[in-house]
Image (tube, rainbow, N blue to C red; front, side, top):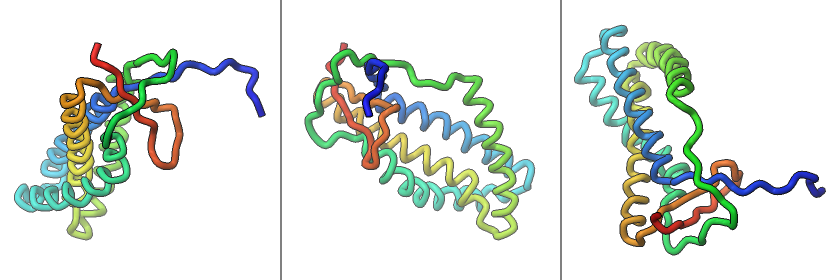
Amino acid sequence: MMSDRPEQAPRLLYARDDLARHSASLFMLSALVGVVVVVAFDWNVRSMVLGTAIGIVVWGAVKFFPEALWQVPRGALPVPPEGARVAVARGGLASRAGRSAVAIAICAALAWLAERWDIGAFFAPGQFAGYMCAYALGALLIARWERERGQRVLFDPDEEADDGYTLYAADRG
């Protein structure tokens, strides 16, 4: 079935910037959750650091392979479609702060539950720190590709695909 609406030009984002932005947000969330669990639940700092380190490895792998690795190009990329525009990522500081507040409340509840099972730091802040590292590693790998080729990697965040998004390369402007 054909749509009556004319097709809009895709809105592309820089892949490295998107991953770096997610990584920075997760760093702040991980640090904040770490402080909350030490202060509110009186967790032992050494145990929390060990649990967080294990969480970084496990949760980082869980996030890196299915979500961050697909954004790292493995060769030449096509140019963006005709009429595509590069946009700034959605979600300003206010929406991130609201989401972070909800996430912290949920994480505190999950941390309490995990504390009951003595695996708290693996989940909070380990999970956020692992996700942060996965996104940061993806951003670093993209930066290396961009530096070698003198191009920027872009993707359409509105495109839905089972195997990731189509990546494009644009010359640095």
